[in-house]
Image (cartoon, rainbow, N blue to C red; front, side, top):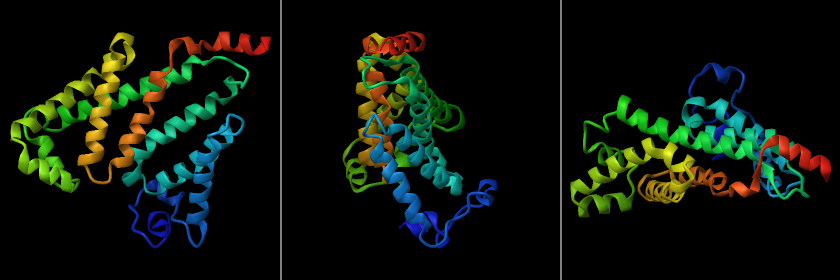
Length: 239
């Protein structure tokens, strides 16, 4: 529960950040959770989404710093998105038919960096290039699900090897797939397959998959809806 996650009752790794962002006593874990939850709802309105980013981002930042080693890998995606949206909120007006281009481009760049970095870690610091069964070893360990057990007993091993190397190819190709417009649809399709597979076959990574697919929204935005920051300011002054 919240007390285990944010409160003094749970186990927390020791880190330099924990000296400042200490586990919270009493009702404060629930207050922090409601602040983050409320911020998420405020994001639904153009008039309040800057405040939503501030509230949700502050709550998430504290929760991340409190357990830096266990949550930073996932929460950093949310924190980056909140920071970009909050930073860019002053560039958008309800009367504008376009939005500034740089937040969408920054989100796309972050997305491909995460994918390429993930492939790099698997290939260089892991054994995904040398061990054809590295993927199935991971899936049948801590992250295994009932569906994973069933497919492991049903499918031949070479299928898992094909999926493993296809994942590496996708991650290393992400800059081209997501930044080169003619290939964008293939990148989105491959990414959806990857994250749906992760959600179904890896325990506790369901929300991570949809978190990553949320970054596909800036990729889907038509370039005709984007305008450079200078043109955006000129457009706002003309309104």
